Structures are given as C-alpha cells and as structure tokens.
Amino acid sequence: DGSCFVYNGEVFGILLDDEAAEDGTHGDSWLATNEVSDTDWLREQLDELMAKGDENSAKDHMMVALFERIQGPFAFLHYCPKRQRLFCMRDALGRRSLCLSISACGPSTCTVCVTNVAAGGESAIELPCTGAVVLQLSEHGVDTNIAVQLIPRRQSVLFSARQDESGVKREEPCARAVSSGLSAPTSLMVAYQRRFNAALREAVRRRVAHQDQVSVLFSGGLDSSVLAALAAEEIMRCGNRNFRRADNPCHGLVQLVNVCFDSIGAPDRHTCLLSFSDLRRRFPRGTFDLILVDLSLEMVEKKRILDLLGPNNTHMDFNIATCLWYASRGQGYILADDLPERTALIDELVGQAFVPDFKRPGDEDRSAQRRRKVAESFPELDISGELLCGQQEAGPEPDAIATPWQKEATTHASVTVMPNKSKPTPSESLIQQTLDANISPRAAGAEQCTQELTRPNRKKKAKRPKQPGHQTAHGSMRASVIDPGLYKGMHSAAAIFQIGIAPSAILLLGHGADELLGGYARHISAFDKRGLAGLEEEVLLDLNRLWTRNLGRDDRVVSDHGKEARHPFLDEGFIRTVR
Image (cartoon, rainbow, N blue to C red; front, top):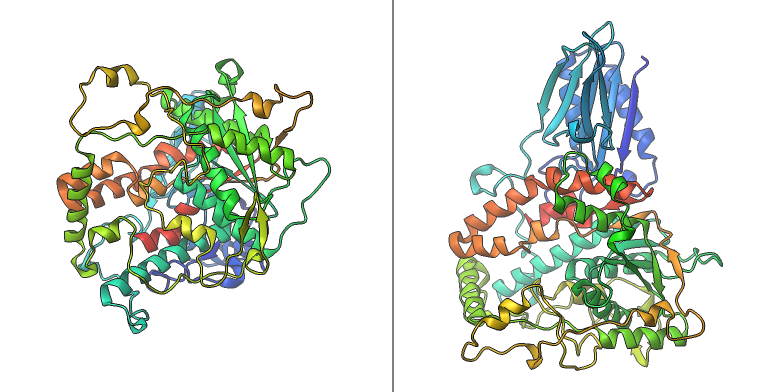
C-alpha cells in the first residue's frame, strides 16, 4: 500500500506474554538465535497487521502490542500514505534515540522531522518511550494543525512496584535446591545467585553472539569488569577467533577502552589497570587488549559533540558525552600482552597503579547497622552479617560452562590457570564480589607502596582534625602517579605499543547496573531512611527516567562513529529477574 517502515534496532527475542516470560528467558528461540532475519520477520508481521480491516485505532493498538513483545533496543517509524499517519515508537527503556522537531515553513505549512539524531538542536524533543506517538497529517500536505496522539503501553512489570496483589505469578527458585541437603535459607540464597548469574550471562550472550571481537567501556569498576569477563567467555565458548589480520593491532577478543583527561592520576586510569591485571590472570594470554585514550581540553571536538546532545545540553551531559564519543571511536594506545617485552611493561604500569581504601569515622558502625537492617528486611533468607560480607556457607558449586580453558592448562605470567568443573568460571568469581568491594592492590598485582590518589577536596580533608581510631589508607597522602611514557614509547628507541582503533562495531556499556542494583549513594540513603519501600521507590525513579536522562543522548553519541551501544544490564530478562 506504499507504506514506509524504518527500523533501527535489534531483535534479541520475542516475549510470549507476561506469565510465560516471567523470568525473561522464554521467547521464540528460532528468532533469538538469528536463524531468521529479524527484518523479514518484522515485515511479515506488519503486512499481516495492515491487511486486517480493523479501524485505525485498533490497528494502532495492535502495533503497540506487537512491538511490546520485542526484546532489544529499537526505534522505528511507520508512515502510511493512505491513512496519512506517521507512527513513531521506541523500546520501553529508550535505548535508541528518536527526536521530533516541528518547524514552520510558511503561514499554513510546517516541516516535521523525526530522526534518531538531534537534527532540530535545542528545538528537538525526545519522544517518550511510555508508548507510541502517532502524528495525523493533512491530506494536502503537512499543515500547522497536526494531531498528536500518545498510545500508552500496557502496565509493565519492569517499571511497576512489586505487589503481592498485582496478580503476577512469581516462581520460587528454591524449589529444586532444597533437595541439596542445605538449609532452606541457604538453598534460597544459592538459587537466587544462580538465577542472577544465568540471567546476566544470557543477556551478554545475546549481545555478543556471532561476534569475533567486542569493545567494552572500561573504567575498571565491577560492572565493566564483569561484562568483559562474560563477553570473553562467550566468544571463547563459540570459538570465534577468525579475526587476526596484519593490519589490525587489536588481537584480543575484548577491547577494554579507557578514556581520561589525566593519564597520570585519574582514578579511573588506576582502577582500569588494576582490573586489567586481574582479568589477565583469570584468562589466557591475549584475551584482552586495553586501549588507553588520553585526552586534553584542546583535543575535544566541542562543536560536533554539542550537536549530538540535542535536548540534553547541560555541562554534565557534555562531559559524559565527550567520554562516550571518544570511547566509541576507540583510538588510543593498545596495551596487548602478546609479546614478552609488552608484558613486562604492562606489569610495570600495573605496579604504579594504586587505589586506596579511604574510610571515614563511623563507617564500620554504619555498615554494621545497615547489615542488620538488610537481615531484618529479608527474614526468610536468615541472612547473617557473615553472609553479607561474602563469607557464605558451603553450598553447591555454580554451574560452569565448557570454556576452552577448562580443556587445557594455560600459562600466563608465571601463573598456571587450570579451572575445572569444580571451580567457578572467571566471570562467576567476579560476580560474587560485593558491589561495594574495594580493589586490593595486592590482589590486583600492584606493588605495595605508600602513595594515594590526589582527591579534589584534599586540602579540606587535611584541615579536619583526626578522629580517634581513624586511619588513612597506608598512612600517606602523597599522590600515586602513572608514567604514561611507559606506553607512549618515551623511554625506548622504538615504540612498544601501537596506536590503533578498536575494530569492533559493538560497544558494551554498563548502563543500568547502578540504577537497577542500587549502586548510588542516594540508594543507600533511601534504604537507611525509609527501608525497602524507600529503596524500591528510588530504584524505580531511576529506571523510569533513564530514557530522558541518558540513553537517547548516549545512543546519538556512540552511533556517530558507526558503533552500536549495547546494554546487557538493561536486558529485559535480566531486569525481570532482578525485579
């Protein structure tokens, strides 16, 4: 009928319904495994829908119901010239950008622009992801009297507060674990842990399937480190290693891209080196490439980045967008440990990195009170202080996947890695760390030194009188610095590390980890003041405003380099599992 359909997104699976897909993993497997083109499938579904003789409003609601079932990020336009209607819709989280701008071009006509880039600048608005937006155009062209209709989504379990009377069936995951001989509370904890691990592993698998290499925005934090480990495990499990080319200096499965303006003392540069060292010891040599992107204010392409911000054009938006823009470009010094001389320099760099454990007076008392409050909030789990500190009771080992390093031993930096089925995989041991755990310099391979990072409020801290029993980390306030000359070739006749660009078109981002798992200080404050109800309210607030605060802007910035942002922590199945 002359209709035009423009789709920007991915189809990772199709949800059957809320009841059948409660754990977020049930869907049409034939579509989720890429055995059928998602474009062909969508075209067939739309042709079948448009062929029905229902009224316009009925077709609109049917189209909303169709795209509500899609798992994955998307934004699309559907224009029907016969009905003179423009149908616009984004996924429920707003992971793909879709902006609308309307500008007058005459006394009775105007121009409507709907695009994934911020073409209208400050006049453009982000289309909401709470439903579909339908523009009813004039039969004689576009006039100034455009009828705009919002067709809301159905109430989703992803964004509503959990209520027992909601009618949503919730599976008790401990049913198959009680026969293990453990106590019921311990079995429940183990079952929850396994379900969490399985959901996150599946979220990563969907986003790296059929990829030879992927990139990760890497700060060295727990979220990016876990994503890097899971991505490496999945690519190795599939055996996708047909990517080595002479013109590609990135030989690793996963490129860890770290961006900073202060290559000497930036905290993220220190943490990324320590976590990179930790990942190197857990995986075979050459699994990861660390790409260090060093920036200065003079290098920033300010105008180009500002043009991508669109409605979100605050100073903070610009700072975040700058980091993402250069991370998606992926051009920097490639730290690959495929040669002995490179390995020695990497070890020297790691030895310079240091992240102290800054403690304030009363931190231990506050943590103890919080642990007791958590235990009181979940009486069915019988949580003790030791369990919350990570010292769990002995239980069945996590299910291990058949990864390549389980078949043969791999020697790396004088450390023999020989995991077996009785041990957790590298990513599982990372996931089991607490979210607020500090990286130990000794565990990460750093030299024991007495240096610390310089903090912006260092002088104010110095004026504060010492409290009894309060100790600064390692007893020194001198700055710990990294020598960039080690990877820039300033100390040798020939450059050891090349400057290159991450070849992958996929950039994994840790967006959603803090919002979903309570990683911000305001989440702790909400729990301290209002308990679980306050924490639930704060988490829901963050989830529901991700589309307007972060995701649309970040999609425009990352895609400017032809890269695709993928967010495993915002996978529909993982969100359902955590919620």
